[in-house]
Amino acid sequence: MVPLLIRWTHFVAGITWIGLLYYFNWVLLPFLKEADAPTKKGVIRDLLPRALFWFRWSALLTFIAGGMLLGQVGLNTPILIGASFGFFMLLTTWLVISPHQEKVIQLYAESAATGTPLPAVFTMHERVATAALRVNFYLSFPTLLFMGMSAHFPQF
Amino acid sequence: MVSSETVIPLLFRWIHFVAGVTWIGLLYYFNLVQVPFMKETDATTKSGVVLKLLPRALWWFRWSALVTVLAGIALMISGGIHNTAIMIGATLGFIMLFNVWVIIWPNQKAVIRMTGDATATKTPPPPEMARHARIAYLASRTNFYLSFPMLLFMGMSAHFPQF
Image (cartoon, rainbow over all chains, first blue to last red; front, side, top):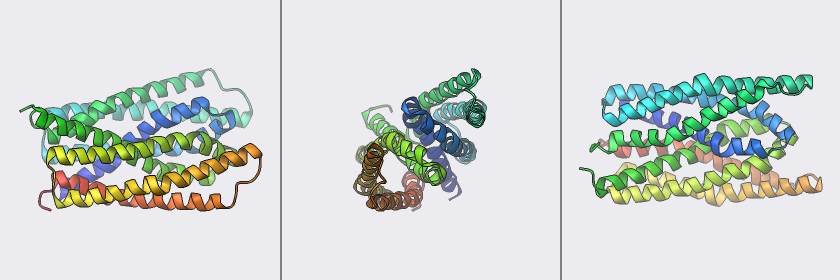
């Protein structure tokens, strides 16, 4: 019963995390490229902080629940590969994507409040966050395959 | 042994995972991020989001829902999965797919169309737009709550044989 409940938590948190990653890559980034300036400003101010809150905390919960589940059901090769990918994605989420997106939000708010143009460093923060999002996006596909293999492909 | 009998269910499961994460992840986005955001943001941002962001999000939402269910059926058949837990989980999944295509999508489409017309003609949106938005919201909330038992039964089908 306990492993089942931990697995359930891992599923729900993991879907939130990777679902928001897909949302960023498939919906938000293309939208920001074509949106007009007032809409873009409103979205960065009011939507992005909420999305990032769920993104980073669901990432941490996914990883903790995954670690607990691993302790209960034991190790194999695919789970070690999948968990390594997952850990790398967690680090990217907390150490790269989140801080740079926070800077984007802050610089946007300051520029809106003072009516000054965005500083040159804004583009750098935006680009680093986007690049890290892309990396996690591509890593998510092998990660999910190895996660599935760990319980459903004993031949490996 | 690695053979088509073992690799094919694994590939269907992988597609089921990726599509399912997209579908339910966007459902959580709608319920946890977009609904509270729409309540507090200004009118310009709101109409910009309805016209430019929502159609993209709904495209991925409804097609990933369909792929999730189709890959799930293919997985059940190719992997020979028949148990009580999967029957309950799949039934909940079917109800959710129905909600997506028959309730959420047509009503959201009406909201997008009416917002577009109102913006183009600079007139207020018609009163029935609020009704469409309300119905879509309620169906989305229903799917949000159904997703938790649905995911529990999906996990049980392979990892809780005691049931």
